[in-house]
Structures are given as structure tokens and as C-alpha cells.
Amino acid sequence: MKQRIQSIQALRGIAALLVVICHAGTMFEAYSKRFGLSFPPFYSLLWIDLGACGVDIFFVISGFIMAYVAWEHFGEKGYPKTFFIHRLIRIVPIYWVCTTVMAICFLWIPSLIQSGRSTSLVHILCSYFFIPHSDHGDRHPILGVGWSLNYEMFFYLIFTIFLPLRRMWALTAIATTLVAVVLLGIFTYQWFLSSTVILEFGYGILLGIVFRKNASGLSFRFAPIFNRSLFLGGFALLGLLLTHFGFPSDLIRGFLVGIPSLLIVLGTLGWEDHRIPNGLIRLGNASYSLYLTHFFIGVAIARVWVRLLPHAPSWALTLLMIFIPCGIALLCYDRFELPLTRALSKWSKSSHISRARNS
Image (cartoon, rainbow, N blue to C red; front, top):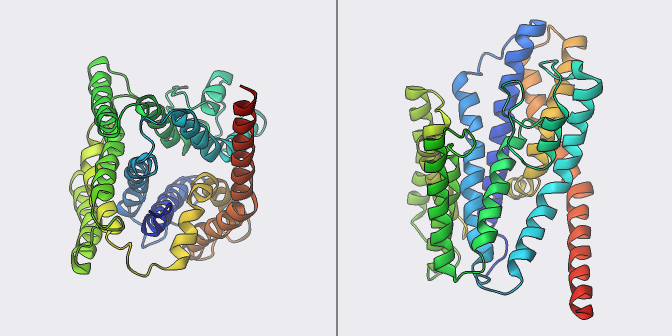
């Protein structure tokens, strides 16, 4: 079975691009108030809300990928440790680099931050270690997009705990735990646990089970028109729900946004046997770099723009704030993220072999 599903890689690229579009809009909102920057005429609140749903698509993908990757390893001795270390290697290094940049800004040059505010040392430390913490009413880590990584790491921890069990027992236990966590959070008024976005990982696990049990082992082999209907219908449903209800609270986000996101991922999986644009796959490979770095780059572009070209067409700035971060993310992935991940994985593997020989 293939280790990398190209259709999912492409969807990762789309999801990351949605988040970039969302934050380009929110930066315009902030800069229009601070510097009088004109808002692009084609940008609307719906575009910003749709862009924010890229994170929900990521969560469904994450649940799917974890079930897919670990499928043959449930109950395998030593695998839980290997799994969790691999997740740390994949997530932590570049996140810590970006968090350090933000920490420097908060501590020494807060004027570079849009809000211009400071933060506490405790909040900074919690941000490094994926610990949910509220500081002056702000529940985000100092690197704003890191809020989703708090949920990712929480999910990886739950997944790791149940890996020693047999496959279906483990997957059932993981899904049940996600539901129990949300219910516990609701009844105890715990803001982090009560968010139904946690359930989106469970949706992905369900897809992973169906995908792995499918006889073809590659795709659901739906008719192409059905795949397109699921994919486009998921986005259409998102647009309809967001237009009618607005962006949902954490209490219902996992349903109002999570279920259409599930349809989008399902429709994408049906494309695995079809030709997928290489550009989208490359963007998907660099999606984590794009997700973490696009905010810095967007702010830098906007700052230069308002100083040098304040009266230039705002749509041109919008395109720059979308395409330049994508280009830099591709470079960051090729030159930094991928080599570092490979080096750490190799070190971890050799260290494990060395310990095994000495034991």
C-alpha cells in the first residue's frame, strides 16, 4: 500500500491556501482601520469564514492519516513510542522556530504585532509546549495559528495511548474518548475541551477505517461525477451554512463545519486514481511551512505596502499576500523543513538501534 496519498496531499495544499486567504482578509481588516488601507472589493466576510474552515479540513485529514499510517501497527510493541516521536519530529522544530520569532516580537518589539500588546512569560512557555492557556482574554498561543496544533498534539497523545490495543478496539476507544472529552468539557465549562472541533479527528478516523477496508486499497472508486459532487457539494454546503448562520461557535463548529469538511475529504479520496496537478501536491507537501509562516510574510508585505504604495490597487496587495507566502513556503520546505525532518528522523532511528543493541 502506498505510504503517501497524493489526493490528500493536494487537499492539504488547498486547505493551507484557504487559511492564507482567510488571514489576508483579516489583515486587510486590521490595516484598513490602522492605516486607511482600502479593502479589496471582491473580499467579503464569507471568503474569510470559508478560509478559516481550512483548519477543519486539516483536522479531518489528520484523523484519516493517523488511522491510515498506524493501520498495520496497532498492538505492535514499541510502536507507540516510535509514532509519538515521529509526530514530534514532524511538528515541533519549525513550530518552535516560528514561536521564537513571535516571542522576540512580543518581548522586545511589540509594535510589530498588529495588536501591539505584550504577553506573559507563562503564556510564552505554554505556547512552546502546546499547553492551552488564556492570557489577558486571549486563548491563542503567541503564534496565533498554533491554537490548532494544541488540538493536534492533544489528539496525537490520545492516539498514542490506545496504540497498544488491537486495531478496532483502539480506534473505537480513540473515537469514544474524543466524544467523552467534548462532553466533559461542556459539563465542566472547560473552553479547550468543549470545542467540538475535536470530533473532526474522529470523522477522519472513520474515513480511514472505510478506506483501509476497501477492497481496492487505493480509492473508493466512486464514479467521477460522484467524487466531484461530494467535493464541490461540501464547499457549497459550507458556503450555505456560513451565509445563513455565520461562523459557528466552538460548541457547534465540529458539526456545522466538520460535516461538510468530511464530505470534502471523502470526495477528494475518490480522486486518487486520477491525474492530480503536481503544483497542488507540491503545495500540499509544503502546507505545514505555509501554515506556520504565511502570517509573518503577510504582515511584512502589508507593512511595506502601506509605506510605499498606500494608494495602489488593493487587489494587487491581496495577490501578493497570497502568492508570495506560497513561494516562500515551498522554499522553506525544500531547504529547511524537509532536510531537518529527515536528519532528526535518521538520528532518532540510529539512536533507537543503538539503545536496542546496548540493552
